[in-house]
Length: 223
Image 1: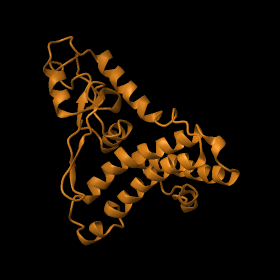
Image 2: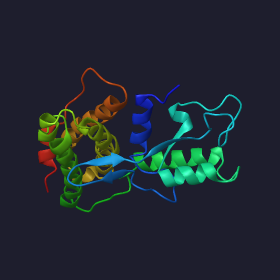
Image 3: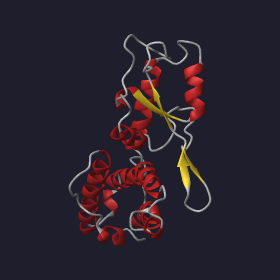
């Protein structure tokens, strides 16, 4: 059984396109001229799909998300070619859990002293998201003028490794700094939070519709 498209998206998104080896953390997107780029991440089996493969067991390991870890090519090769027992299944599962937990908690420890500082940080994250939407999103000029390009694939990856993690950081950071926002700004934040959670879910399981990005929130976060 091949690795499903949903599993690929879930693994890439929850790892934010970064190697899960704590001693590496390489960005798995290679950028070329302009907005072109490609993905070098590899979905490694914790328990090999073949019984005789690295960390293999009778019957082999599955192609499901629970048995996969996102690695760079170098770490993948080093781990699988190491002597038996060097990298146990427990170690790889721990790497994966710890890395994904760090992505999910990003921003929780950021405490700002003023509303202006908080908004400046949030506005940078929103600006990056907006830049990706305008340059490689489905309504971008590149996507419209060259429909046969791989822009859709690049856009899918950027949603998973940049926009979703940025949204997570925005939600966590504002959650840790509620005291700096007005009631109106907090209300707009909740609108954004609803959008961000649904947007992420939509990347893994297509939804018929979900809350759109609240433009008022972006305006409210201008320092």
